[in-house]
Length: 383
Length: 232
Image (cartoon, rainbow over all chains, first blue to last red; front, side, top):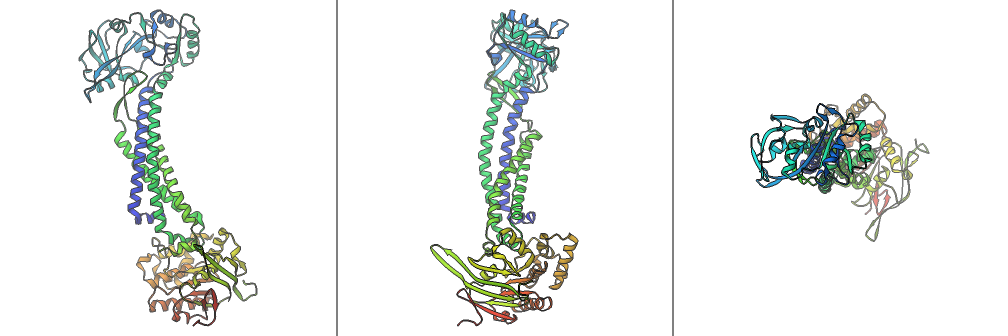
């Protein structure tokens, strides 16, 4: 009966569905931004890798370690030994300014100087075009997202930073990870160019296994020659994304909540008109002996059904419009751009549908109770 | 069924007072009524005299402000809402002036509605529905929707719905009020048959002397009380 009467109120039903679809589309859309950003920041990173920064530094930009510290770190127990020594990469992290392809305006791009062992420490790195840079030369490789976001980063392009000219010799991927927004070169070339021969900012090391981390951390933090902070790489990336992730989620929740309030009024209006149109039917059913519960259930089912249709449409719209959409934003921790793709996941769609259901329940509850509590004699008098 | 074996409906000292603003409207005034089992009673009176209010009290969809309403020995004005709903589903059949059929349901499904509150299987329900629609002469209209039926046929479906649970009393609120004379007569014939052949107790509110003439007794509502003679 509930389903059959829907067609009699096409206008208000459509408005309600449309409103809820809009809320869910925005809800899912905004959270897909947060999801995509966090994915980019945490897609890669291994629990077997550790990141060492100066004690008190919350990001590589704020960290500074002396060369001798690098040697002490390399000698610490638990690091995997490669063919050319321990898998430890002392890295420099600077930010350069390049024009964005989309707007032509300059934006910050991270330029990372890495050690010889960097490719063994981060084994997700894959050259998809060209080759690796040659140590000692002014050559760079560019992350796929950075190449797509910034002008002049295609293979064989050259760009000027400070007194040096750099040549792009390769493009790399990192399974969608944060490094894809970076430019990499040899730390031994980048150091002198930025007058940082004696310093580096972070060390990335490969541990024998994930369980070695605690003993490795203890060894470094208890060494009186060092003042360092040791973090598992996965935790480090997660920390780096927390600020923006929370901001996007909070803003998204705020916008979605405000829109949901509007949608609830839409649903209330639809269901009150549904109840008004069926008041005499409800009165008749109750005169026949039905109590209030079936009435409440029938109205709630209708409201939830409309909400589910709206939620599905909104989720579908969000998926169609946003999933995989490429964007970039500044990460305040590094003051540089992070490229990422909006990510509409099944769990996000389920959250959207749940949100719609909640709107449907709230929107249907008051009309349902009003209908159920209306005196039978009053309801029967309605035309 | 009834306490004394004869009286099915016993209303004692029933008041019904509605409050409108600061004013109290006395619709029923210490009203008494006894209806023997198997009677066909017509209630007449001008609009607003309280006929429908009395019918609502007898059907358990309204309560008296004071006094008692006893049907088949059950003091229904004391029942909780939930128990009263259950009581209605077992003991009363309503016939409304505007039929009050659900437009999205077929005739059979409209008649089936009161049976949803019983423990009958769908097969048993189907059988009951067919019997009820057969009794009102509409066994060929089972799958028709109300909009596909004439007014008289819709009222027959309404009567089938009222009798499908085999209630002890039928309460009819102007059952011919929306019908032409011919269709109205058919409905009155049907009520008459139900009264005579099935022994249904029928209380019918009507404005139409032609309709009240079919009843075995007519009472007139005047200033909240029942009278046996039509007031001047």
